Amino acid sequence: MRHFKKLLGSVREFKAPAIFTILFIILEVFIEVVIPFITADMVNAIKDGAALAGVVKTGLFLVLLAVLSLSFGAAAGFLGSKASSGFARNLRHDVYCRVQTFSFENIDRFSSASLVTRMTTDIGNVQMAFMMLTRIAIRAPLMFVFAIVMAYVMGGSLATTFVVLVPVLAFGLIMIARKAMPAFRAVFRKYDKLNESIEENVRAMRVVKGFAREDYEKQKFAAASDDIRRDFTYAERVVALNSPLMQLCLYFNMIFVLSIGSKLIITGRGQAIDVGQLSAMLTYGFQILMSLMMISMIYVMLTMSAESMKRLAEVMDEQPTLTNPAEPVFDIPDGSIDFENVSFKYARTAKVDALSDVNLHIASGMTVGILGGTGSSKSTLIQLIPRLYDVTGGCVKVGGRDVREYDLETLRNNVAVVLQKNLLFSGTIRDNLRWGDPDATDEEMEAACRLAQADEFIRSFPDGYDTYIEQGGSNVSGGQKQRLCIARALLKKPKILILDDSTSAVDTHTDALIREGFRNYIPETTKLIIAQRVASVQDADLILVMDGGRIIASGTHDELMASNEIYREIYEQQNKGGERDE
Picture (tube, rainbow, N blue to C red):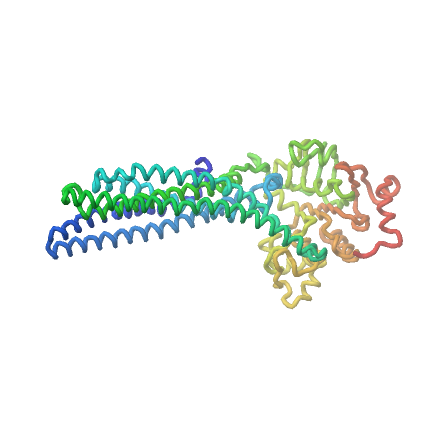
């Protein structure tokens, strides 16, 4: 219930349709239990030789009640659908917006596949549960109570059959639901693994085909899918027992009411119970038993959705680890960067720091190259500057202020990062570039693309800047994708530009042209370049050599060649026989 109350906040403007749904359901149920009562009186009247006019009048009244019941049911269905769909839309929006506030640390706690499952399958289950709560969960208990009361009014002692049937049916349905619950709960965790397998396979399709591993991936997917099938099959087999149990109770009630009722009618000559009451008892018996079965189905559905509610509430309850300060600073004077005794680890429980004892001063406008082997924490270092993560110890300053003092949006608009894994979105090249600046003019976009050495290949496309980019940029090469991402970052006109190994897919000549453009056209922008090639950082004002999360050497190219063996070894290996173009 705590999770459900948490999610109910997403109903908002759909409260009125939900409330009116409940009201119409109550009216519909009331009319449905009144109809057998009036029908019984009409049957008895016909048996006693009532005039045709009276029968017609009662029949027309029953028709009116049936039409009203139908109208109330239709209105409840329409408003219930509107309320549940609106609730699901709002909930999906709220969860998505919540995810947008997460830092990388928050997102690391949930896999992307799990978040997708929560926003699709889980929200679908919660929507279904909400619809059932506003319609069936109101209708079934009301129908059960009203029908029991009317059965005793109409049948008297004959209604004692329900004293036996109701506990038997209720116990059976509860046991069925309890057996099915564990399987339904387990299946959602397996959905995460299935979606993760799909996502991984689609993203790595080129690798899969390159290694001819299609059959292996099919087998892996089939195993995950079959695991879900087994759980669902077991759960549905258990739930399927509802029907025969229901039929058993229904037919037992019918036989009991017909046999005992008929005997009472004959022996009592219609004084204790008559034909009309007998027919009404059969109807009420059906309504009571159907209500119980609906209640059991609600129990099963709510059990399924309870796990979904819990998973969605986990996302909504997750507190962003990075937040704006109480009085944020909105002005960044320059692109200077300072690391003061910085240490960092990705998890609080980690025993080893990813970064330790980092002290560094970078003046505004400098070009800084960063070299180091895999796992040396180069990317970790630069992610602390736009505050994608917060330091564990020490502080990072931009423009002379701790980055934690700045408004987050202001900071990130002034620090443009071209990440190692470049990503383009589906849409035109123009649409992708405007991620850097939504108000950029065509001239500004073209200037940024010329600086990133992208303008020439863009114009070679038949549609130029209106060329459509497929999802993930799959219809452009790796080098073209990198250059478009650099151009997009340049459109932000940042005070700090960070390139995280983002020219690795371009040839050395193009790489050199990009660096030359940076020197000539954005001299006041601080530029940090993470690279694998010494040539990409050789002319930098300062070069950092990293290893094991520490800066083990710093200086210009000439200084490092003279003083640092690791740098000199990298340079000589790459230039042995001339560096080859990539």
